[in-house]
Length: 562
Image (cartoon, rainbow, N blue to C red; front, top):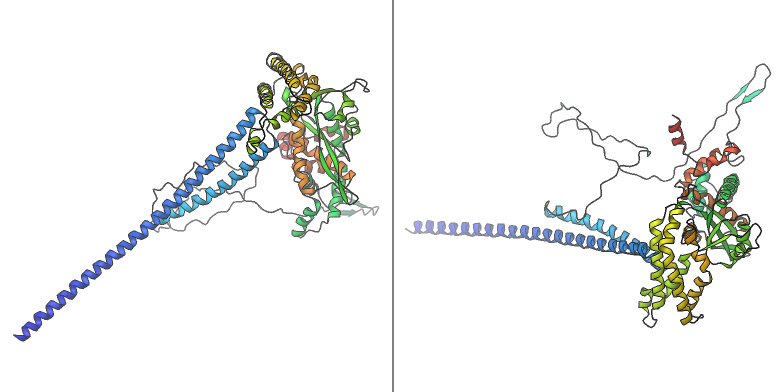
């Protein structure tokens, strides 16, 4: 009996142990399930957080892009803003670039979190991506063929037949590549006379030079269009293992400028043959005896597009060591058309009735006149300083001038006759009312105040301001000349100063060529390279064919000839 009881007790103990083991395994399985669920919940939470961050960044991008668009539309609607407004738009653009980069990072993080959480249904793309445009056909293609599979990835069979191919194009950039062109001229001797015969040496822009036209064009373009001084360019060549010191590059620049001088003369004649030109100037630091002095770069722009003129646009530059009036008077000594410019006193001798050959017709710039009132009516600036009151007279003056600008936008590009007719019908009443209103306000305001000076600035030159009403060729502003000087104003922060007066004159000549090419939609580098390579062999009477508006790239010329 005792033996039977022991066996029963043992069986009961085993049963209890088995039950406890099963319970422990169940608890462990439950714990593992809880851990898996917790991990999944953490992954889902991480995915949700990444998605929320990406959505937040996308929203910020949308807000900034709308702010930028509103700023641009306000500028288009109300006319040219102050320099502060232009800087604000630039700041918004930079901020938008950074936000778009942040959005790309956040989208990639959201994609990775979604894949980790196993949620393919998640909204991974938070914005509509634009359709990819094909790359230009003229770019060279490098074909890389990925090895095809040797067996079916499904059943393993090797009986494969080509069905087609998918091509993925990726735009890649390579650093500047240089090459040395070896021109071989074989020598032959005559067995009869024992003289040596050989083909003539190839043409070089620089006598006995060792650089080609494309490299010369690159040096000119980098120096004057991209504002890279020669010492920086020499460093770039040195990093590529090429020894081109600054002195050598300077020699090349001088020789290239001399070779291009005939084209500069043709552009000069073309600009001053215009019925109306824009004139302006900007400061250029000039090195003089260990310090810099304030020199000037003058520009004269011919642009007939606003009144549908058939002649191509061009920009001409001159350099002077100071801003004396003799310089524009010498530049325009043989010109007798319309000059659109600011109120610089150096131009007054050109408008005099006793000028040799007759006076130049003055056309004042409404943007300059408006700017003086806009500074006094700048609401944003006044809001920062509540102690300064906003001038209601200046505010109304800006509104009245903006109404005239609105009419001008509608007739930009129309013929001169159409522009004159519209101005007589719509703009003239507004201009007459503005003149009467300004005269009334001048009687109420002291002439020594900024507002009184702004009123006097326009009323003194009212005939020049109102001249656009009777001449459809005249523009309302002098912005064409100011745009032509914008690159110089940006570039002088890089090259710091002009080394000499001759260097400034040479820079003005190259600026003339580069800006004229840009105004005509021509790539300045490609044009300079082709012109430098062919100008020596080009007939002098056909030199006009090399001007930017007549020039055709070699590839286009060959295609048309074929």
